[in-house]
Amino acid sequence: MPTDFNLSNLNTQKGDFLNLIQRLNDPSIPDRLINLKLQSTEGPIPDTLEIIEAVHTSEVDIAIEASGKLGVAGLLIAAAGLKKSRKATYDAIFKLSTLTEEEGKKKKSKDPYTSCIIETLVNLGAKRWDLIELISSQSYITATDAKKLRIIDDAGIVKSKYNNKNKANTTVASQATT
Image (cartoon, rainbow, N blue to C red):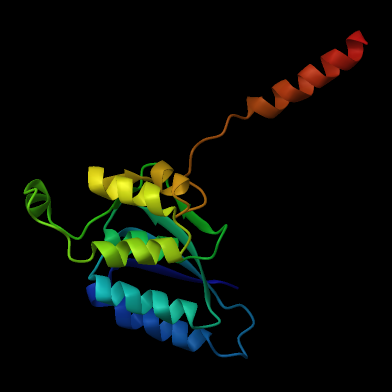
């Protein structure tokens, strides 16, 4: 049975999460999946990269469910999840820079972690040029943008229940006329 873990603040929860990964890395444990709920997750980039490295050098997989206003830490961890198991709610927003709002308003300020963020996201499957364009033009992206970039797999967008019915009705109608 998968293990659930809620992660919002890396400063206080990093040790607990790394201990969980270490415990689940035991080969005698049959199900080594963590259902990781990212809820407005914040934290320093070095701690975030340590968590990603721990996940990707272990036998443990993480399924992601992101919600709220996530910092760069939340964005990177969401991208590091198991492919096809990286979900975000439709209203999730991901920050693209470690700069504060005030620093971001000053055009002279540049995020010292930009290249690290880009390379990590690209190595986790993001589209490089689309990502660079977004980072240079805005501070946050939506769950839909993250899906387009291939950072997450499901943006929580509601799908019409009528689309398949319309196709089925069209097929039935066309068969009836022939």
